[in-house]
Length: 187
Ligand SMILES: [Zn+2]
Image (cartoon, rainbow, N blue to C red; front, side, top):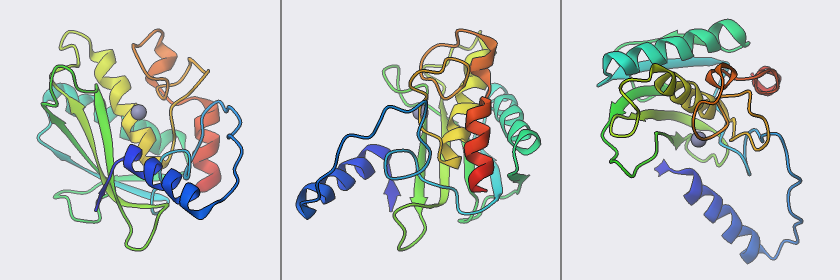
């Protein structure tokens, strides 16, 4: 089953309503990590990835992102080719349309799980990312790789790639210390 975040959130909310649970709004957070409000967890400390239909720019951007995750967090990050059904991140470029997102993360759940991805696709949108601006590619690659660990969007912080939108400063190319704490706390 391909699971997209909004479908997951909708399902969760429907479940809450049908279940009659009384909930209060989640407090505003710098960024949330993991379900039910954030993105889903990776299945282990070892994060494997493969490349598929990547342009040179996409290749370079993902090279940076995975090397950074490997060097700056407790996750073990390893490229494995060719991809298998267990590959945690299949990194690729695609034409998602001029009105599409810069990039997207789609994950497949572990069978029977509502919290953990078995594998997923990190896709950069060739139609939107500016071919003249490598920073947009790099930030988008880091952003989707961040989602693959469970990181949600940054609400307030502007020093992380998990902030949506344009690259306003070089800190927005990377995860910040708060993001790394989340990752190291889990994996
Ligand atoms: Zn995102």
